[in-house]
Length: 416
Picture 1 (cartoon, rainbow, N blue to C red):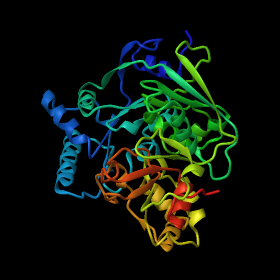
Picture 2: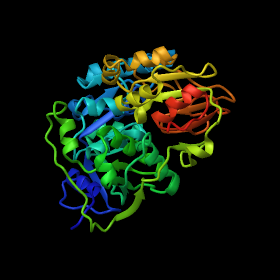
Picture 3: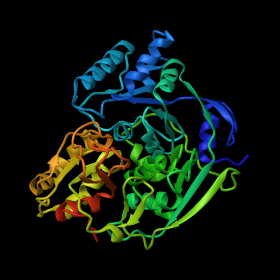
């Protein structure tokens, strides 16, 4: 039987030779991730079940990233709850406030390999599909059941494959590609589907770029994002993970497979305008829009390649006196490498604020929030009302290149 990647991975996880879209299966979980914001509810729910021990402490990963360092008494209490749980359960894969954003830390530390089922109490867990895993976000109470049993039921999703072809222009990136796709199919265009990204353009992308595509699968309603593993995947895993893995690929004649063709040859930088991620326009239509803050970071665009792109544009220039800019590397590894390369010096010299690796203003619950009437230009993944602070503020989404160019001019600017 011809199957998609998602169907093959879920078939294996459920102990079956085959699975098909629409089928309900009970899957064995390979990696279960939670963080400081959603973890406490998972712990509380697990304790109500009445079990003393989790199913496998080696398969649980806990990362502090949303409110780090603790910015309130409640945040500090959440950290205490999770540290106590980690100690009681003997969970070794624990990354306290120093390490960075969960969706960057897990791949860096080798926790994700092809063919696995990865769940996390964060909707952008789909990022990890860039390594050929079936990765998806779940609720905190669902995670409690995973802690207890190591299993979770799924409805096997249909797959929509985005066959991306063409050569990207200078200063046009994966973020622009995925924003363009979301703008075309809408925020509900791939509801509960596995969003697979393929084609020559995807194959030419780095793992970091592929993470950008998969990260935003949820913004079009997707259940997961996926990229077929290749030699780049294997090279990325070398030195990071010793776990065995199985590479699975979609059969072209799989019944549940739908294909959408995307040509990026003429694509210009894209902007998601307030207050929906699918309200996407080319930068030429919004250029000159006033901004108050630029946020460079997040699990979408806080990687080393993003910092390099921004620093190249900003070197020797100053952030506009009319705005403030926050630069937040996605992890300690990214922060350290950016420091070694002099990228952080470039940002500091330009007048930007460089903050510790964390989610920052992305979730609207931590540093760098925007006030009533203010406008944020952000490299993150969501721009809903109140997402980064006041519900009376506006958030635009862009690539790192647009963010850097706009920080210099104080208004949305085409980096080309």
